[in-house]
Image 1: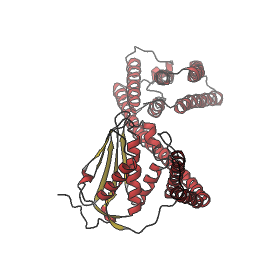
Image 2: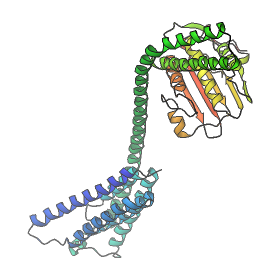
Image 3: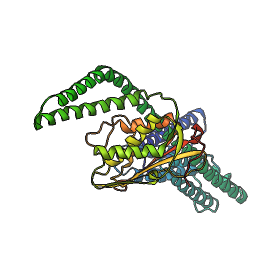
Image 4: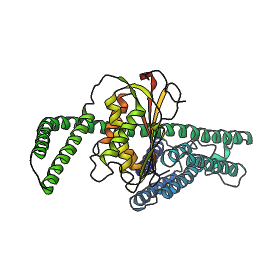
Amino acid sequence: MKIDRRSLKSLIVARVTVVLALLIAALVIQFSTTSFLRLEPFYDLILVTLVLSVIYFLLFRFNPSLRVQAYVQIVIDLILVTALVYTSGGIVGNLYFLYVFVIIAASLVISSRAAYLAAALAAILFGALADGMFYGLIPYFRADQAAAAPTLGAVLYTIFLAWTLFFVIAVLVNYLSRNLRKAWEALAAARRELEIKERQAAAGRMSALIAHEIRNPLAAISGAVQVLKSDLALDAEQARLMEIVVGESRRVSSTIDQFLHLASPARESAADIDLAEIARETVIMLRVSGGLGDGIEVRGSFEADRIPFRGNPGAFKQIFWNLTRNAIQAMPDGGTLSIDFPSNGRDALQVRFVDTGRGMTAEERARMFEPFYTRFEGGRGLGMAVVEQLVSDHRGTITVNSAPDAGTSILLNFPRSLGAANGKDDRP
């Protein structure tokens, strides 16, 4: 798991905050009692901790290995807590609860595994300190602490209680931090979705303006050129130039249509349609128009199936056209595109497009439905955004599996409750 820089910086700041709080508490105790308290070693530990925090901050600014630094900080913190527990009297004192903060920090900053390792090391250090002081291997910090030494039963009870506390805290914090990370991921996904919706809204406003200002004059220009081409005696060069004008007019008109689909999909009434027939028509149109390049094979169950469904005919034609074109563009050197309708019972209909093209990276998959984002030269970045909206309009979902140089699989899932023409498909 990658160490988050902000989390590690927060750990450094939190350490300084806790140490300063302990320093203030010690000063209050020192000046509010008339008896002499030997607190110089306690102040020394606080000074060492503050100096280490400065070193940690400098390493944080210039050290690229944040994981190593995080583990080193956790280990040193456990050692410093053990020293504080020792000065407070070991089991006689009451500072061993500070181990809990180090365990929490290990879980939040590093990982769940680090929290268990910190709990285990805390148990070892505290157990060794308690046993060593009880059996005289480690002298008490002050003489009055030795006078209040606990019995063996009290030592074992305290050690067992502390160990239980350490691991229970590790389990609970890991559970909470795991849910917190999921919540942050969901929030980030929602933020990305909101950004996409905002772009779609901007595209809608722009598309309305473009359609109003360009579409009608463009259609008039294209129609006039076609009339002139048929009426005039043109040489080869003039005919080619007019074909270019007509072709570019159609291309710009297609861009406007994509904008319109993205901004305001046509509200056609639902009708009984055959999705396999739509797939066949799409492939035929691409083949006739030259959209299927050499070396590209299209196959799948769509060639023989009949898939009745109730939906928007224009929307599904646009979905099939965009996904097929996208797959072809991903295979510039040729390949295979499969269009199938996997069986998924009576409640849902699935449509699957699988190509053997160049595939996508994780970043490309995350952005593929963003308006104006394209992976292809000359692309407009609208096709997949239109597909997502049209699928969503039919309460469907899109699942994408892809990896670089491993092709792409896109699975559309539509609830049949929207209405198959006869409630089931006609496949054997």
